[in-house]
Image (cartoon, rainbow, N blue to C red; front, top):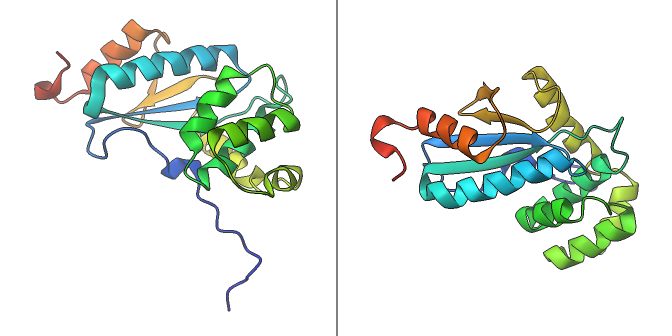
Length: 182
């Protein structure tokens, strides 16, 4: 017998942007309060434009709660948005407003992103999505993530500079030889 009170949670690891058959997959572990992650996301947005259907991107949560007190709740808010197919809208709003991530602000961003859940705040208070964020964090630790932003290109840890030029070169190097960008 199934539990009627159990909530099925759509996990962030299922959310990608870009073509399903893209030859290069870029994954970033990040924190919504991190200035470096916000800059890295701007670079990723440029790369997604530059590479079109050749690049697929996923964001994974790695809140550095020792230094960012709002990062975990912000990540939970992003997971709440996933439930309504509004992750990317919420994701960009969280980075745009990374200095204002209290619960009231999170509710405003959720509304702006198009999240309709009337229980948004109670779910944040009850940490309904807390374990989902923690699962990303633990998986990141297992893969060697120690700080943010951390990138993986086709499941390989990227250790170079987080700049448009350096990431573009690493993506080019990961491309099958016939699919290089113009």
